[in-house]
Length: 112
Length: 278
Image (tube, rainbow over all chains, first blue to last red):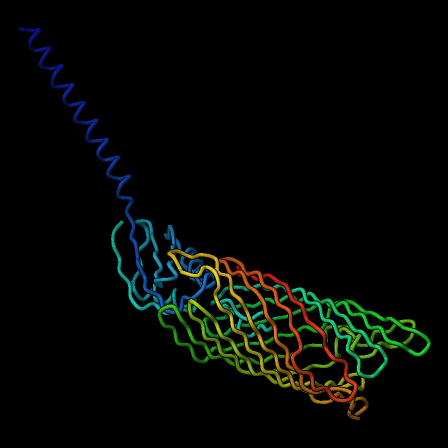
């Protein structure tokens, strides 16, 4: 009787440890896959050469919370990725683009 | 924007950003109709710094370092004279009063105005005596200039043109003639032929035209009939444009020189330089 109880306790403990380990692993995987933050895809008018691209990149990278800026000249696209501490309002994005000498025509945003 | 090689007024400057341009320039003038076999050469290092006050107003400063040689036949043989040092600094402001951005293209119209300050030595002498004005590093005068500049840029090409006028003032009994200038620059992307994604470096083939009309100089209030006139130069060149910096070179050749009297004609102006923003 005592041996059976001990086996049950050991079995339950093992299941509990296994479940905890799997839950922790899932949480770690989840946080690695979804870094938080936002991606802003901006349609920018007036971008016509590499030197211009750097001007707009620099304006965004000066902003705290911006992780990366990519420019696609051919399509007039500026992709700004932020961490979870930073969100942009549309007017703020327009101002930054305007200060760099360009015009923001539209934007889309999505969670990363 | 790639911007012209032979003039500064179209340089792109963003709000609260600096732009630096360094050019090395060699000017040769040796076609002397006077028979004195004058031969003038000048090597110049021109440093330009610009700052964007806001996205429309920018301030510019241009400081040259000049090294000038002039040789001529004095009858008893050829005499060479030279001078070197900092020249006159020019400062000017540019205001973009019209800007129209569209997908992959932009149009900008701006006005500029500035002053040339007499920071260069203007009464230098050598063992022969006081150097003539073409050998002085500065004019000694405060001179004003202003004009209009237009820029049209697409992903394939850029066209810039400026019209400017410079009022030269008297110093040391000498007054250089006022100058009317028309400059134009076409930059055509030749590489990459097809644009891919991202931001590739661009190579531009450049062709610039510089037309100047200068009034006669005056010495002690009397016009010098061997000075002033009109000159048209053509300048083929190349630019390599990256995100951070631009390397550029061009050579200006005279296609027409209609100068007064025995004014010394220009042979070539060669330029090489680099530009970056920070």
